[in-house]
Structures are given as structure tokens and as C-alpha cells.
Image 1: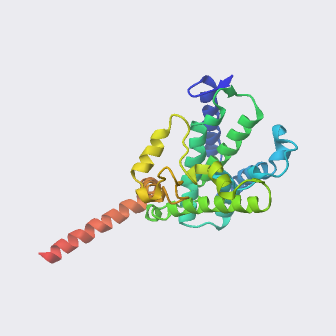
Image 2: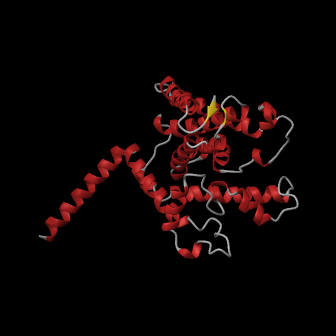
Image 3: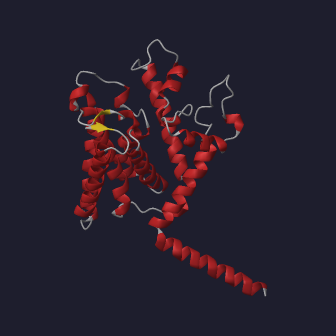
Length: 282
């Protein structure tokens, strides 16, 4: 079977992902909070383990040694490594951001797996790709669905800051790996960062057919942050404003859905306050 958009293999992979998520959700839905946390921790450590030990776990990576792929080299890798810490030590907006970004990022990757277009479905790298991404979705979304994380629409403006913090961590990760000689030997640091470009970190690089996403962001981005043909895009800053606004809006809407009780109560309080001021004014 060949993996391509809208092919039987494509839908088979997504069906397995959905079945896994739904199955785990219902299997432990009525369990105690302690049991849910144990399940989440096991899934998180399983994902962290396969990520850090790639060259020992996956046959096609045997003997490749320690490399950039074992570190926080992109958004999903960073979230995989951060997930256990968020479970035990994260609070408020950090947990909110983990739910939203940790769900949307890997789901988008699985819905648009352009790395494997035209490639055979049954290969180790495809299995590794779906395995680590579905575990990240599970450990990001299930805590909210199970009530382990209490989300709030009031923290929507803070969620994008976590996303950009992740991007900064990725840059620092690359710089440290470069300094230690783990990658980029004999190359210029900035050129290497520009080429790696995880999540459009240094410049836009959408896959074929998704140029509209780049155009949409550029339309909302001040020209001072955009390249002019002679200089590159400003790292991190070129899409900060549009992405901040977009992520805040999405987090606000999702926060309302997850926190309907408090949102409704707050709306009633606000309405009562407005009515009270009108009576006073009269």
C-alpha cells in the first residue's frame, strides 16, 4: 500500500489513530484521577523513551548514534520531552497550551503527512511517525477530556506565549547541538538554522499546496518583519503578531467550550452588573 493524500492507506492510518484515542478515552474514563495520571505518565514515558532512544528502538535507525533527532529539534519533539513535567509541575496557561498545541501540532502532521507522499505504508519510519504523534495527541488531549487539566478561557492571551517559548527552546537546542558538534560541522550557524526551519522558525516554508497558509500570515504581518529579497525574514518575529492573534482567538473559543460553566456564570455576572449600572444611571 502506498501512502498519499485521500488514499486507502491514508484513511487507514487516521482510522487507527482515532480508534486508539477513543479506545483509551473510554477505557479509563471512569477511573480515578490517580489511575488516569498513571496511564498518562506511562504513555508519556513511553513516548519520551522511544524519542531519546531512537537509534536503539527503531530498526531503521540502528547504529545512527546520538543526533539532533534525539533532542528538542521541533515543536512535537519539544512537547514530547516536556509532557511529563507539565503533568506534574505545570499549571494554568502552561497546561492549557499543552492541550491546544500538543493536540493541534501532531494532528496536523498526521492529517498532512507530506513527508511520506508516494512512499510505502509498511515501513518503520511511517510506524515511528504515527506512533509518537498519536501518543503526543493522547497525552495532550486526554488530560482535558478526563478533567485532569482544568482549562479556562481567561488564560487565552497567555497560551501563544508558550508556543513562542517552545520556538525559542528549539533555537537554543540547535545552537547547543551546533556548539557541541552534533550537527552542522563546517557550516555557518545561521545558514544551518535557516535550513532546518522547524515550524517556520526562520522563514516560511509550507509544503506544496499549502502556500495559502504563508500568504494568510504574511497578509497580517507588518512589512518590517518580512524579507525584501536581499535579507531573510526576521527569525521568530516575522509572524509573531498574526500567530499571537490567531492562537489567542482559538484558545479563547476552545476555552469557552471546555469551561462553559464558568463562562456562563461570568456572562450572567457581567449582565447583572451592566443592568445595575443602568438602574443607577437612571
